[in-house]
Image (cartoon, one colour):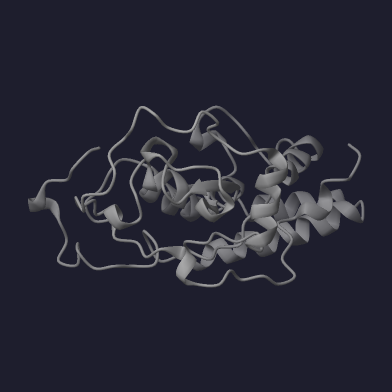
Length: 219
């Protein structure tokens, strides 16, 4: 665990918040654009899909995500020692649940990040878009080489009590998350970063499907 110099702490360091940073409007724009792109692909309108995917490649979204999942910051991460369980050696052997359990969690949570409520998209839908339009739905080894929008709202599975702290793969300990909210928390508990337990709010479940409607498309 990395503690943070108290001299670097912001005035509201100890406040309890909903997420690391308030989601920026561009995240919703990305979800809308990629949804339209998927519909265009399903209609076989690849020129329109290509344009929409490029529009969703918003640098500001990449910058937002980097603030959360990048270097530790007193302002963003606000770690505090609350006496939560340390990293343990005798943790559950299985690091992640089965793919079917993952899918059940994502559907239970309405394909939205349970921390910041951002609409997120399935990994398989990203792979499909990349297979069809590789230049526009760009992927690479470095963060800068990857599509900013797709990377930021790609679905992730998060352990409420981290695996390294003894957390299990019981569905009650699992929530859907966006990449920034999951990776920003590292191995800390929600209490250690001053974020409220997302289980205190009901998930938002509506017509949003995480773009899973493209997954069955033959490429």
